Image (cartoon, rainbow, N blue to C red; front, side, top):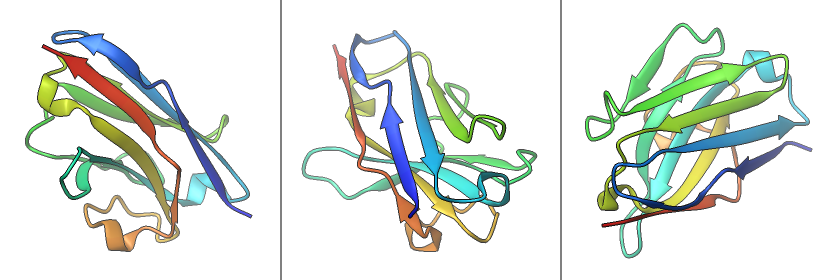
Length: 124
């Protein structure tokens, strides 16, 4: 049974940083592409960042490019999202997702497994 468990969310002031982690189990982690998505209150879930199985290919939403960094540690079966220079509009529930294809997808429909999410709140 595949499980993805996010952690690292919290409350931070604008300009601050958070580091999210997503620990995976029940899958051959090194073969999966991984993504981060977020959902703000009253809005649809949106793509944030993705990384391929090899870690070579990464994609970012335009709104986070240059501020967020996605990385993975295959030995720990964990994917990370380092978020710097946070803004109030970055507030939301952050979800990690895993894709059997191994690719870094920007579409949520391409992912096979999802975590429960972790709340990140940025105050002005």
